[in-house]
Image 1 (cartoon, helix red, strand yellow):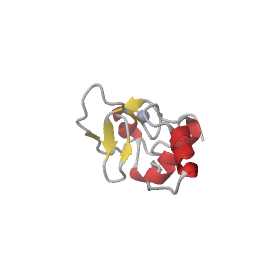
Image 2: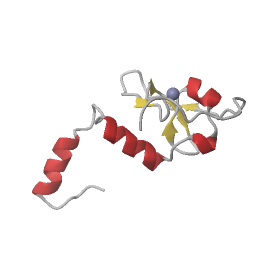
Image 3: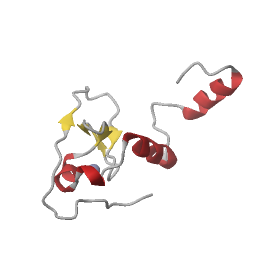
Image 4: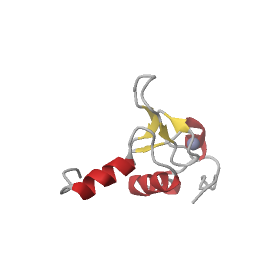
Length: 98
Ligand SMILES: [Zn+2]
């Protein structure tokens, strides 16, 4: 999956996004549509969604949280989570984390 798209068909729909209130130094999540780092969230789905995308998105056009996470992980590991290290730890001993 890549690029832009999955926008609302009628161009009139809009979903509400909420600022997550995190401080400036906290890493921003990538928008689930355009992957621009954003601090705004579409809370019914619990996915990050930037305001420009929210203007054209419909709820049905947005990925689920699971789909969003899978897409993000496929694209690049998040900088503040070292997945290689987690995998290393998970194979070195019984996984203690969910
Ligand atoms: Zn976006």
